[in-house]
Length: 171
Image (cartoon, helix red, strand yellow):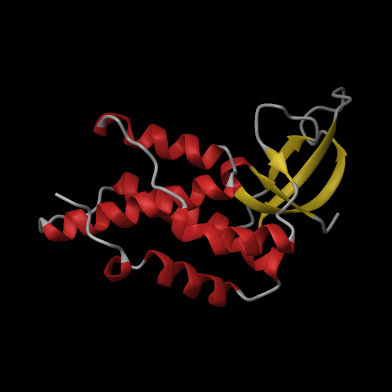
């Protein structure tokens, strides 16, 4: 209790309780009660500690977080073969709970933002919603792992993925 784990697309969560199932007294499995760190609500996630259907892992160490920050600019965007599959590609990246995939998602949306600005359009809801989720997941984990404030990490991510700092793709 009080420890943290990264829980699938929910990102960094605090373990608030470890115990029996809150739903079924006859269920003998042990459950985590998790609270997503950056959630403003009182949302709780209850999951068996051995749940293989969702990625659960410890947060990055400080050295892993520093290494990720150092190589962020080198992580390529996600490949979206067909526009109809964009939302699925984003969801798959989020569900891995892999920080590099989250960075790739942010890079993908940053490049799309440039493209849409150039054509006078706006981003789709799939882009903005998944960008927010990826940003929040990285924000929570990097803040914890590096021991710095959410605002500092938010500034870092903004500088890293600000539209004006992205090179225009070759035509």
